[in-house]
Length: 172
Image (cartoon, helix red, strand yellow):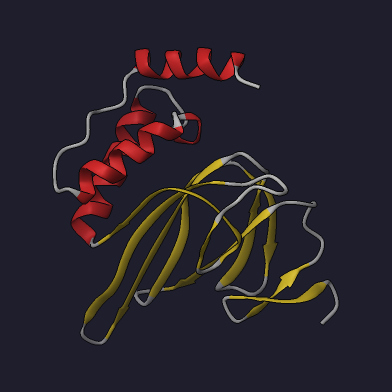
């Protein structure tokens, strides 16, 4: 197949025209059955496979949210959200279905009530005028830990964000 390398992603060949060191995510949309989508993040690459499948890519050291939902004749079988920081060459990473090579997993939650809560938290961050992809990675770990323990996460604040931006500006 021209334009694709030998590797596989979600049953499809990986595109070989993506920029080097791009983290690729395979997205699927089948009305009422499968929904793999990006909730936030800045893509640097897009490739349509067909009407229901596409691949998007993210630059190293960027953050994105990947939502997966699937159902069958009996109801929902998967409801999941993952928030990842993409990796640079040589960094360790966790693997994840539909994500190549993988990433630094900041948040991983299953079950609609927890997924819905994360989506609400993202909405609150965006209501502050902050792109959720720019929020402090430590905050996403906090949300993961609190919701995993079935407790409420603290809301992200403008002050917390400004402190993160200041810290990030002086870090190597």
